[in-house]
Length: 147
Ligand SMILES: [Zn+2]
Image (tube, rainbow, N blue to C red; front, side, top):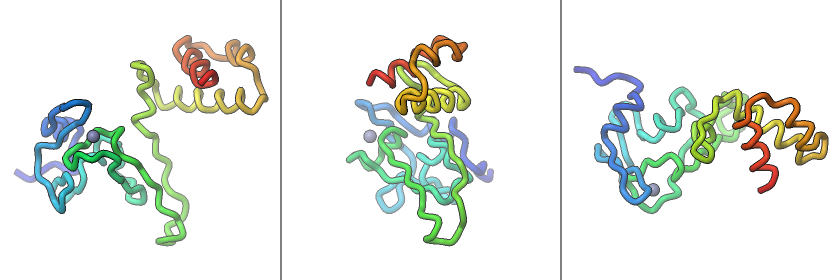
């Protein structure tokens, strides 16, 4: 049966094992990197980088089989390298889970905008409190501002 393209998150996770904070790929390797034939690095599936050819991944982990998304760095190509124009926006799935709470992409944006406003002195945390409806969003803004 032909393999589904792109591979699903479930397909990738079924071929991993958690090991001391690493997510170990138990599938094939190619040039010492986790590899799915006709696709490439399975960490790209977990990082939701399918359809983002101009964003590259680099391991920050010494375990060659690790595809824990937090152990990879995502690098946007310089648009001048290949003359491809602005790079398509990507929402980092790692940012959606903060302190054990899952946020939507919209909430992540709201958090980042408000943190920037408070840090630049445009608004105070009290101003922000009045405009934010969700407590968990405000708590995350407060946490980041106080970091
Ligand atoms: Zn790792």
